[in-house]
Image (cartoon, one colour):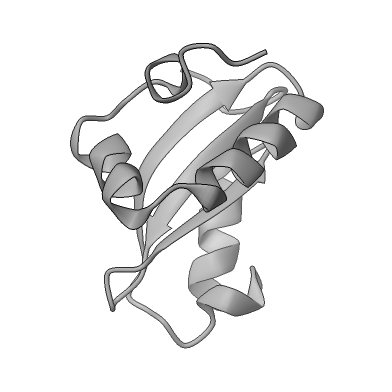
Length: 96
């Protein structure tokens, strides 16, 4: 499965078990940036980091919309997404 030429949404777990949600066009590159400290400030100093979930989306607009929705979810629901490797359609069955 290629991770290029489309948008992805992903969750990264920090050393304190927090989950960080982000979007990218290349999950591997973006995760490497986070690990090296060149990614989001929110993840700096929180290593080791672990990429725990990712899913492709149709467009940047859709990625931004899902990112905002996931960030509003309670931690227990985010943990369920990771534990059950849920698809976005399972998390938000009536999304538009």
